[in-house]
Length: 367
Image (tube, rainbow, N blue to C red):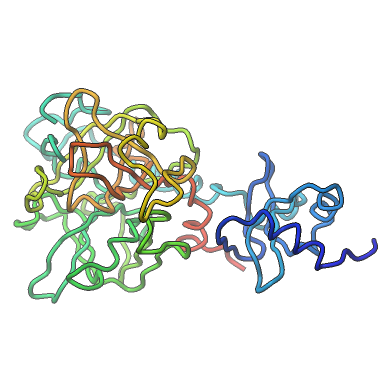
């Protein structure tokens, strides 16, 4: 094959680049429903062919000035790297097997309601108390010195060593997140189920910008390892498909009224999916949201029958649905931002959009 002039290729590719993107070479990608790998343009004959036909290959990013494109790959390469979501799906299955309930009894005096709790009014604005360990993946993020920790954000335990949260929770006015607490129910009182860890390493999404409201997702590695058979702790699985149910649950210790302090007891609230175009009536493009809401990477939700919403202190916490018969949940999104709790729909980072990135950090491929 005759070489293609790079200057011509750059002109074509840069003309369609509207925002900064980044990717690792050999990272798995998807192009028109087909599995691909991010390869240098000169390594992808199919992409070169598209350019010759005056068509645009899908960009993964750049290696310095060299374009990286999503190149359809052969079966043996899929087997080597795995398709996006394969590892997360396998781990979810493993965790369900490990933590499978061995008894139908509960530690609460009131029977735990199966599945989604009923939609009631009033509704973490208009939420109600969760049962102890009803959401066994819930995490608290702590800030400040060890003798005076302030718990200000939430998160989801997704593996033996990692918590999923919002990138804007990494740094606050109290400093950088330093502690993780699992198994808590009340903030002010100790539970026998609790385990506390120091933060070992923080992984904000590489495209997160604190001045913007996009890519608001981060992973926190803590200095220990959870044994899921003990203390009732269980991980949450990751939502792998874009489509989410119309109704799901948000959880957190956030304020129950705008401007209030965080709540001492873990709260839960039923939320309803709201179309992005409807949500944009209250979350218009502007400062920090120049591209408007992005349906591929954000979810909008609120309450149809009440003021149900997340609020200050709920940031980083999950929206989720229960996996029937497992006492485990699937995390659909991460509490990101809103407007005056309960007065407008909230916006959540869509987890499915970031599964490949999560897998690459939490369950890196073994060489």
